Amino acid sequence: MKSFDDLRTIPEPEYLEERLLRKGAGVVLYSTAKRRGDKSVQHFKGAQSALNTNAGASLEDQVKGLSLAVSELTKGLIEQRHQIGAVAALSAASLVVNDKKSKR
Image 1 (cartoon, helix red, strand yellow):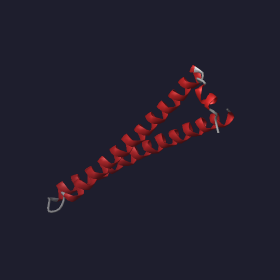
Image 2: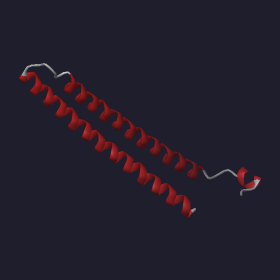
Image 3: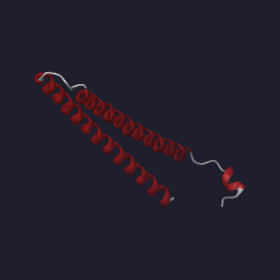
């Protein structure tokens, strides 16, 4: 446990700046992952909507609806891949931060 005197000492400005940069990087990576996940949900809902509004339509309209649904599904999958990349980057950044903390 730290004593009162240890807590009163002011850390080096370089350490504070580094800490702020690490936290900022974590927030940016998290928000990127969240945004990509939200986009993928949006595309999946678009595919679902295209499939639900296809009933009773002509054969040509049904084919167009299926084409739109498949297109939205692929876009959603691509967004999920980007989301996975952002989460992996966040994990790697967390690993580096924890490694630096353990060396101190």
